[in-house]
Length: 257
Image (cartoon, rainbow, N blue to C red; front, top):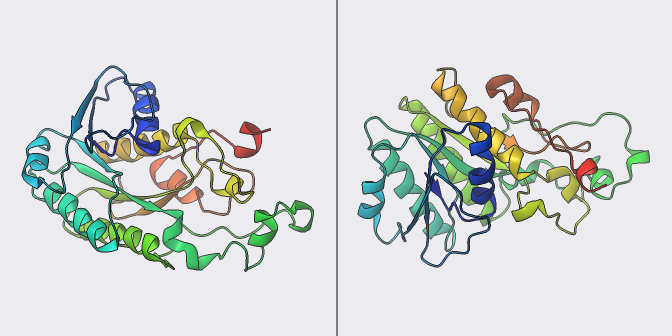
């Protein structure tokens, strides 16, 4: 189940996850009239539902679902956190409960790197690579959330729920998404080359999480950065490689050459 399956991330998951494993079938839950940013494919069911307004209808969709990917957003911080409560409480109430991947973001740790203020990140952001040297520190995947605004706060709230489900023996991971866009289009700012994530790599991450869950080795409660294998990446993607086998194949420097 993709909550927000018509959006930038969801449309890529629908396209590429079925290429990784043809057995995937999708139930995509979106607001009525939500724009579909990717073509519909086989094995996809679209449900137009404001599940925040009708939680019982949402709960009726959950039995038989193996994996929930929570991508939806709405309103301000208070409403967003209420929706997160609804999603996680509904998943927790299922027996057996599906695995859940909640959407966090690289912005959950904005205070850790201050892209334009704290060396060496301004050099990377401004693409002054001759001054950079051959190595630089990566933001560790294990770093707790340290947001600087409400957007980061809502992501930290998702991560807190992820930890809570793990303590109750349920399978949950938080995805600290990088820049995932429809058709993999690059944003204008130069720093984007460090945070860019191809839709296929996003799909590889979800597939790696679910496969690890199915074989019984998932580290539930973890949060991982979901970034492509960018030459000037500033985030730790070695930890998800080691723990779930996440191996991104795209590189912004090559994709936009």
